[in-house]
Image (cartoon, rainbow, N blue to C red):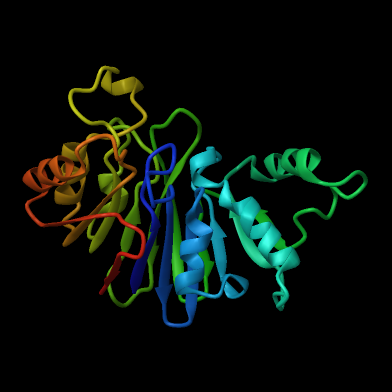
Length: 256
């Protein structure tokens, strides 16, 4: 398997870096988990956006999906059209959300087929999702809106776990147990002000603790603000993890 980071900023793009987006490849299968602002340009450096086997959204916050609109325009108007609609897997409520977006952006009378470049459907978080060589399993996180972490497996090389956005009260270690690579947010710098039960983001130390608890070999620390000391975040996560910690930067690749 191979992970390519498309963006690793928090709720808004950092200088030279988009928000959440991750390309995962295994064999001939290519999927993208989340498409925050600034990620499509990076995706085009590494894969043919017309030939993705799936785009999967963890939740419906702007910093995880805005470039879905940019991808829609690329698929609709690029001189080389896609051979078929790109599969788009949305969390529960996602289809109604797309309808609302179409109502805002489509020309009058054209909302019904505005997102026809996608084969859009909602995944069932309680069931595995098979995409080519990969199997995606979901588990709920603790966030401010419904959000699902993803365990992505190819049954051969070891799994990847992506936390999406989550606070520490979510029981993610159980789902992530035995994964080789963990992509975890570590948004909260310093001492958190929100109570643990109400918090929707992790500290770097909590990200490192999660990676250690599930027995990962590599932690990719993501969803960070440039205004915070990212290298201090790496050290904090590494102190809790005890293994290799990488900073999610555009183009970073991890293969296993």
